[in-house]
Image (cartoon, rainbow, N blue to C red; front, side, top):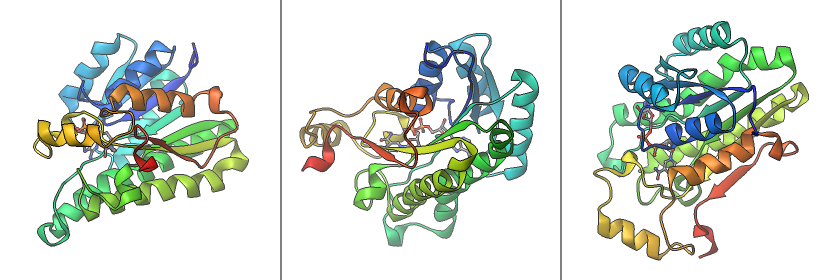
Length: 249
Ligand code: NAD
């Protein structure tokens, strides 16, 4: 049990097919108590119930700093502490530069980047007071390759921002015993792909991936378990590629 007696917050968990829920479940299987945050309140509660009675769903729009602070205070009041934060909530749009609007930019940028900033700022005072804590952020292969399959330039830029935010927080927070890392997933088969890529497109991506398949939410959950547990006790400020070897090409 790698996360025995740990309390973890995971954002963006309402979809049972998503990376957030798979991560919450994986962490729970390793002994953690998990707070599942989502914009979708009903979905968040249902997602928590699906894992087990001790896990709780919370309604939280990660773009709203005040709500992020409130939720973290509620979680600390309920569970006594927080040890781990996974900044997973994100919205993707496949729109090209000239097809996207200022509103598109705001939602894509704000959910991923402002959300990670808000939630990290909400937990850091508590982590600092205990001289320990662990933050993991979800970047993307889109940040490394300039978008491509799923994300337009605004999405690629948002994820580049998230990866850089993770590194900068790692640098600043290391003296407080707080580790911060990121995962950069390749194409992962979740609801985020709906309407953006068809089966033929998925087949083509699988074919051009050295490991010959798309990623699963569990592939990302396993990488996050490594980064959020003591298995990675001397690792901070990294962006871990989990993409089936895509960059080897
Ligand atoms: P998903 O759509 O299943 O999950 C995203 C979740 O975020 C949803 O449950 C949604 O309700 C929630 N959310 C949206 N806006 C929110 C807000 N303002 N506040 C709180 N929650 C909010 O998609 P997924 O594929 O599981 O994506 C998870 C993360 O992984 C995202 O950050 C995504 O950008 C990233 N990612 C996904 C892929 C992929 O191929 N699926 C690749 C690279 C990175």
